[in-house]
Image (cartoon, rainbow, N blue to C red; front, side, top):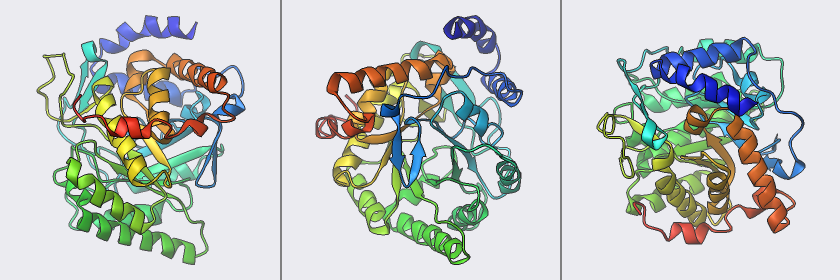
Length: 364
């Protein structure tokens, strides 16, 4: 029934400009119009990471709910966690429209949104008003014109200390000029020193310590990944998210929009992001929990991310093209996989094929 409803709605949504369709989706969620799962998740899907309990490993990726409008509706749909943002200290409009493009043939999106959001104060007010429980992460970014970008990230940690289940430090968006420069080892080390110092200040003030996750780009040069991961290990980050969207266009067949500037997400990103995920798992010897992102549009893709090293998963573009029924299908496939291999928890398979994935070429 759910699949039929989406099949009916999809042509209507796809007739709209992508951002208009997205706004309509958010308004529907705000109004409480969204599908609910039939029952509780199978306990084999449960994940405990960073002292947090996730009923299943599937989360909505940042970018879907930039301003914390619908985190509880997302959880109500059956996601195991929600991540809001990226949110910057001051409101900003982002890049000029049009800035989101559907690559129908590829089930992919290209976006150059540019951290459009309403700023810290607006998102904070919404999160403070929440009455529901559930894991909600806050993805923090820097304003485009900030004189001190590292200071913007530290400000995010201070601002949302009471309401975030965890923080994601987004230094990997391709749509803010020079932002990815913050991934360079020296810059990243300085940024993390300030972010972690801000967290220490929060703890010293009597508040809880929140996990810090760093989100990486899939376009890091092969020789640069190891020194970047060494910084993450040395600074003791709690998690690593792999990956953001890509500037590459490998595997894209849609010629109408392929040349558009911006980050590509969806199935064409799957291979590259999964190889990088596996390489990070190998470099960290599996000691740091990883969030697998990029091209998850099926149970098979979700399983591959787990086998490559992910403890948690995030999706967004797959939901655009396959609708909310995708969640239930992925969960069924994960349970079937757990049955097949007699796993007590699905994440017992995390990293089981990491070395094989890590050995693959990035652009295969």
